[in-house]
Length: 580
Image 1: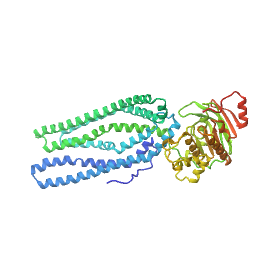
Image 2 (image 1 turned 180 degrees about the horizontal axis):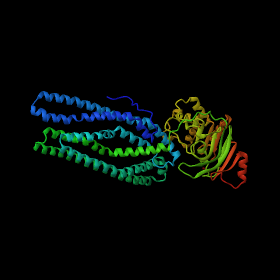
Image 3 (image 1 turned 90 degrees about the vertical axis):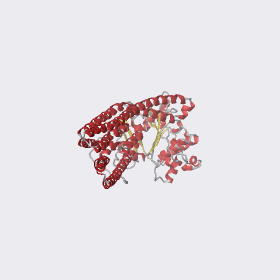
Image 4 (image 1 turned 120 degrees about the vertical axis):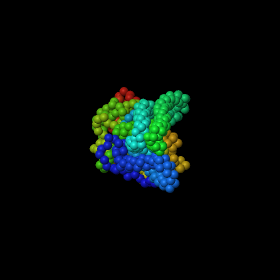
C-alpha cells in the first residue's frame, strides 16, 4: 500500500541537536501521520455505532435490508481503516530507516573519532546500539500511540453524549490510567538508567576479554575475568529486572483496571436501561467506545520501557554528536611538498589536561629523515600522534608548508600522510584492500609499489591467495611480523609526503630491517619526509637527523652524527632500545 523513499523537508532553522534536527526535518511526515491517525480514529467509531444501530434500529424493526446495508458499510469502513493503519505502520518503518540513513554514518564516524577525544572507556559500540534503539522505537507502534492520545477527549465527549454517567465513568477511568502512566514514568527512570549503565560496563568487559584472549588463556586469568564479567552482569540483570518489574507491574495493573472499567460501564449502562434512562444499544456502544478511548494510554504504558530507552539513547547520541560535530571540508589546499614544522607545541592526551609534550619545536625540509629517540615513556609515540593530527595540541602549531594541520580535513590530510602506529591494526578483508586503505579506485600498480617499498611483496606472494588473501578481523590470521610488513606497505601507499613510523623494526628480522632502511631512503629520494621512532639502532640507518626527547621535552635536535656524539658523551640515557 505504501512504498518508496520518504522525502522530508530539508531546510529548517538551527536545531538544538542533530536528533532534534532530524525530527524537525520530518515535520511534514509527522503531519501526514497525524492526519492518517485522525481519519483512522474516526473510523474506529464504526464498531460502536454499528452496535448502536443493530440494537436500537435493526432488532426493533426486524429489517433484514437495513442489517445488510449496515454490515456492508461497516465492512467497507473496516477495510479503509485497515489500509490507513497499514500506511501508518509503513511510514513509521521508513522513518526509522531514514533516521539510520541520515545519522548512521555520522554515528559511525563519531565512534571512530571518540577514542581520539576521550580515554576510550566503556563500550565503544554503545552509540551504534543507541541508534538502533531510537530507530527501533520510531519504527514500532510507540509513536502511533502518541498520535492516538489526543483523540481521547473526542471519545470521552461522545461518551458524555451517550449519557452523562457513562461519560463520568469513562473520564474517571482515563484519569486513573493517566496516573498509572505518570507513575510508570517516574518509577522507571532510575532502573532504566542503571540498566543502561551496567549494560555498557558488561559489554566493555566482554570486548576487553575478547581483545586479550591470548593473555587471559596463557596466564590462567580466564576464570577471574569471567568473575569480573559475572559481577557486572548480575548488576545489569538486577537493574534490568527492576525496570521490567515496573513496566510489567503497572502495565498489568492498567490492563486489569481497563477490564474492570469496561465491565463498570456495562453495569452503569444496565442501571440506566433498568431505569429507562438509556437504550441497550448505548450500553454496548458505550462499552466499546470507552475501551477505545483508553487504548492509547494502555498502549503507551505497554511501550513505556521502549520509550524511556529510546529517550536515553537519543540523549546519549546528542551528547556524542555535540562532542564530535560534523567536520566541514575546508578549502582544498595544494599537496605539501616543502616542509613540516612544530612551533612551541604542547600536546595532551585525550580527556587529559596534563601536557605530555612541552614546548617542542623543530623544522624538517623535503628529503629529510628524522629519528626520535628517548627513554620509555618520554613522549616519543605522543609526538608521532601529534605529527599526524591524531592527538590534540594544547598550544603551539604544527604546519605542513606553512598551513596548520587543522586547515585540512582528515580525509585530505590522510592522503599526504603515511602512518605506522606502535600497535599495528589491520582490518577484515584482503591484503590488497588493507594496503590500499579501502580505496575502491586503487590501481594495482600503486598497491604493488607500496608492497615493494615495504619489502612485503615476496611475503605476500607466499600466501596461497597472494594479494587477495583474507586476513580476518584485526589481521588475526597473520603473525606480528607479517602484520607489521603489511602495515608498512599501507603507510607507503600513494607516496605520501610525510611518513611517520612508530617503532617499525619491533617485529622485523634482519632482512626486514634492511628493506625498511631502503624504503626510508626511497622516501627521502623522492623528496618526502620520514619520521622514525627508534626502537633499535638499525632504524636510524636511513635518517639524517635525530631528536632526543625525555620527560616530554626536547633534549637535543640536529644532524644525526652530531646528536649521537653529544648523547654518547653525556650520561647514558638509554635513549635507544626502549619502547616509549
